[in-house]
Image 1: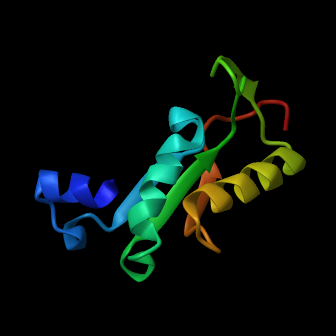
Image 2: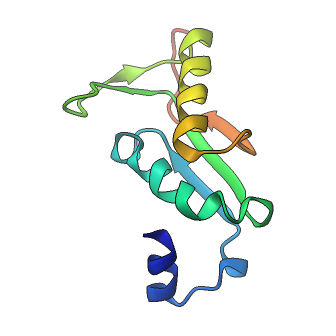
Length: 100
């Protein structure tokens, strides 16, 4: 699907090498979508994704922010699985958790 998008946009992959997404975009669907091209072009793309926005899984309702170590670890593991890579080049907090 993503290959078709690149063809439609007529944007060479060499022009778009810094990819930034977040686990909340589409409740993880955006990470899955990017994985289709990232897996085949891992050495050409600097991948970034964010964590910290807690949402209700079924509705997507925003529940708050979390920077708790266990939440960060769990979120990272899920992002790695969705993106389909072993490492994320830049993993950073989307919203500040004032409680941590």
